[in-house]
View 1 (cartoon, rainbow, N blue to C red):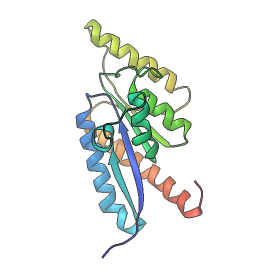
View 2 (cartoon, rainbow, N blue to C red):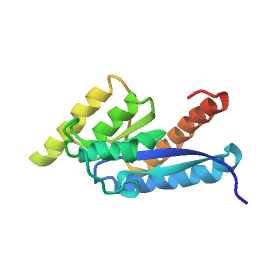
View 3 (tube, rainbow, N blue to C red):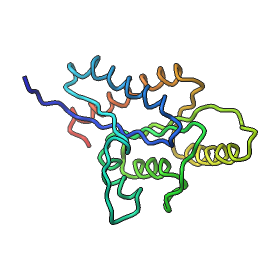
View 4 (cartoon, one colour):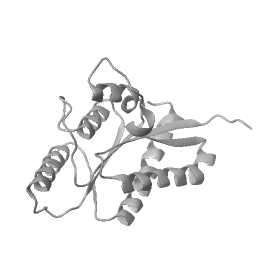
Length: 177
């Protein structure tokens, strides 16, 4: 039987080296939907540019993705491992632009950094430096989370998703946006 549910979209922005974290997030969203969805009358949907965008023209590629996917989300999750990503013309990476845009639009934003030792190879060291520079800038206006392995990331994300969803559901219940 059809029912009405509140749909909350989680956009996951990340460079291409975080597939395992994507799987964890998908799994935790599915778990939240099973555990809390029926009682709360809500559902959480995993989105990212690979699954929820389509070919388009008429603007900067990242601007088109922002309009198609990023702007439609309620929660933005940014994840960094060893890569920072490619410059967009507005930010040093697409993920950075997505995070900054989401913050400016008042979205719930959760950012995660893999805790990695400084690499020895120069190209990897350059990427590491870009990530650390962004982490330093972000840390002046936000709280981020650092993880050491996938089990700790999974446990932290489960807790953080529950907290953010409780906030969003409480706002919806009181009629706030």
